[in-house]
Length: 191
Image 1 (cartoon, rainbow, N blue to C red):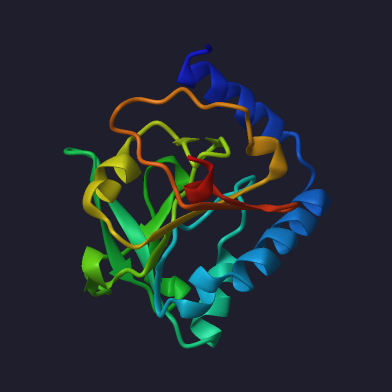
Image 2 (cartoon, rainbow, N blue to C red; image 1 turned 120 degrees about the horizontal axis):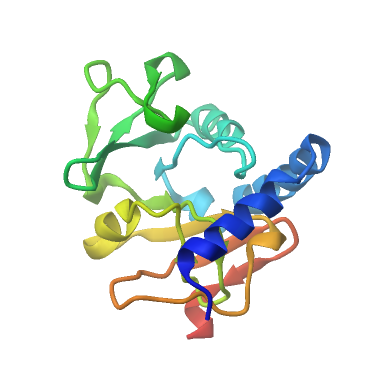
């Protein structure tokens, strides 16, 4: 089986070749399925990253959550110990650009959101399998954060990001559902 780093690079190339128009169409299909899900409808507080092209767009998801009166929490990574904390985001002006062009909350302007307040987390990733295992971007932040998280874990992915089997480590934590532009995988029933 290929190394995770090789798989990561291959997937970045595939996603990087997606044109803006088909990216937008696929994102809308994913959003529609997400907004129709029980997890979305039931949650009052959701955690989501600030995406960058060619990831599945999350800006529309955040705006829809605000429109529906939901609270949105976004992550702040702490590189020295590879941990992260989530903060409530009330508008996009509360974000700053940090390393690698990532946008994170300005911690002096936002309130911390404790893990037990998050009803559902949109877990990012590059590659997924139908059992809910994923290859992330290589930092391991989410695997550490999710160790004792008991709420719903959902990932958003383009169909191209699904593979037969992801190489796993003992500490990898699968998500419950993967919402793609074509289908929603309920990973919990595939185990």
